[in-house]
Length: 345
Ligand SMILES: Nc1nc2c(ncn2[C@@H]2O[C@H](COP(=O)(O)OP(=O)(O)OP(=O)(O)O)[C@@H](O)[C@H]2O)c(=O)[nH]1
Image (cartoon, rainbow, N blue to C red; front, side, top):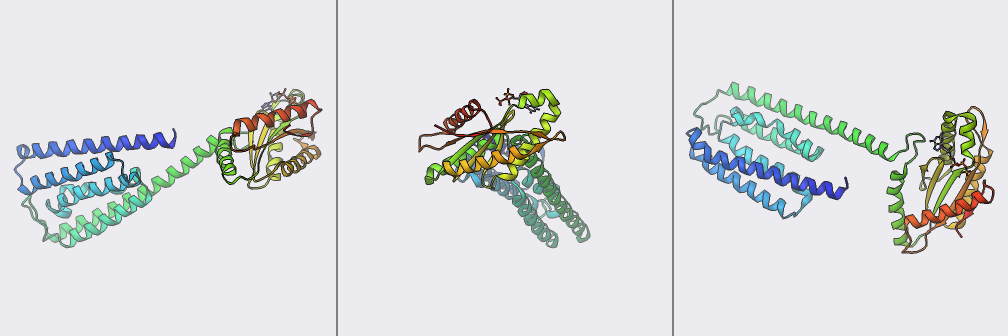
């Protein structure tokens, strides 16, 4: 899924969550007098909560400051929860048991910073609520002794710290897995080079930049000569080993700002930003020599490669056209006898 549609989906999901919260609050406000006889505080608190949730909805809907939507939603949830905590018994409130969930929610929908800030804010609040537990208005009519309040405050702080840690562990694991998935998605499993998708990311970016700053840009297509014969003579596994070894040699021989990828089969591609045609030709000749003098697999098989090079022609040129020209040059190289470098005509 592209970043844009992901953002749109997040936006819609956020709106739906706020709508559910709004309806739940409205329902509680209407149903509460029927369910229990409560202090008028609860009525005004309900109105206050509805205003907060409604304002958040309008703000998210208007799509202003999208970067801050998650933080605003978390802050709003706290603004709704904390007064409720303070008028229903502080750390002894039944609402207090929801608080350790906040760092986890922060980690799930926000990230490290949101989760940690949420934990810090809650710990400070609970410390205050514990220390001043005897002064907190308790509409339930029950008063707890200091010992109970301190004990509950202690357990609350401990569980918030625990869920903050859990949130961080979860994010570490999640980041690790997404990195791995992303790499696997962009990597060729055999040679471990970039695959076509991986290359496209860099290709598009480098091409745009070259056009913008009007710098030279070249593309090289590389094909192993008579590779079918290797497979036929030695088997597919030996063919695979040769491909891996050729990929490694090429990879060792290019510069860090050049991008090598497996283009498919026994074909490779190199994107050469900031490189003109004559410099690209020199690089291609070096690569051709390196492969030609090498011996591959345990059978010490000699191999050669043919290379086709194309360069960027102004603003209206594009990736497909450049690849096509490099492919034509490569084809010409094959026709002329292989093991050679051909430039676009
Ligand atoms: N072992 C192995 N072989 C592959 C792989 N991908 C493609 N090939 C083989 O590469 C060979 C390519 O053959 P051709 O396209 O006929 O080209 P060639 O024999 O290299 O001849 P020229 O390119 O004309 O020099 C085919 O036999 C494919 O099966 C792979 O991942 N592993």
